[in-house]
Image (cartoon, rainbow, N blue to C red; front, side):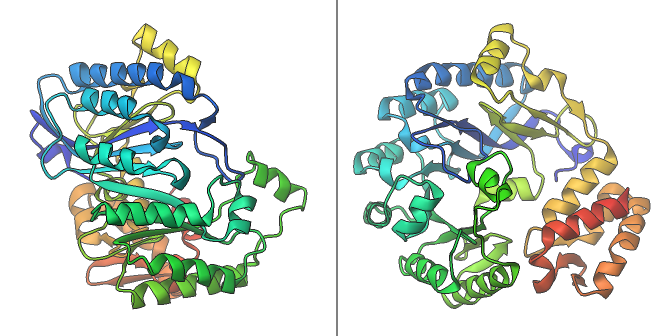
Length: 399
């Protein structure tokens, strides 16, 4: 996290996230803010989104020289947008042109990615593709509610690589209903066979509001037991390491130089601005000594109403306290393989809160869930498997 007290108030550097909540079909596990079947509203939505961006630039960034360090178009399914719509969006976001050497990612799904769209993205300055594959097994894709096939996924990867896209990512999932270690190993081996520079591998999470959540509550969803999930994690770590991928974050692996810069912005709690439905922001300039969060409405009509009234959430942001900022730095940092630098915490937040932290994590050190090494606090191999539970314990210990 940037230290606002030592920063230049006339400049600002931040990551930019743009949420595009359109998709053809909602997946059975998805709890992201997305709305299927509303493609007819994309053009109007882009105009509202650019109105928000204009308000941010004219008010939050007024009088400042600013640099967008990374840009990420997420969703939903951004690759649903027609080429003229993507042109309008990117031109509106960067009227002076794309910043040089900026990582610019667009999420895509195999069924909506075409060679023409890839060429359009390249012409606009987008330089990173994140492809939502999830599985190379048609049976598991159907269970997840995905609308692409394994063949379409392989074709999309080939298009990306044949098109000369050096920087790209594949998303995979594990812990799927009735998935065996052998099933997942086949998926992972297939993904690694493409020699991708970045791989994201996520454990299926069950949210109670999703179709999977409702089926799980009714006892109708057969998920792998915890023992098998641990086995799957072992497989992931072994095979990605053998393939030369660095495990730099709990769910992310990359070749040297290909870690996702935009996601590292979140995990380092550096400033970022989110545009669009439900987008979250963290900004450190003119937002109190520890920065502030704000969040956009999640419904179309509420977002449009905010645009008409001009009452954007960044105008009513509540600054973080020192303790809240410290907690965020600690908990996001523990997701990273590098962990958290203790001296940096001490210098930024003061000795009292660090002493309290040491007391809170002492039992976890003794039990082997956390380790202190080379001046850093990090999760051990065993601790990384239960990180969410460790975080809850740390939070309760620091209150």
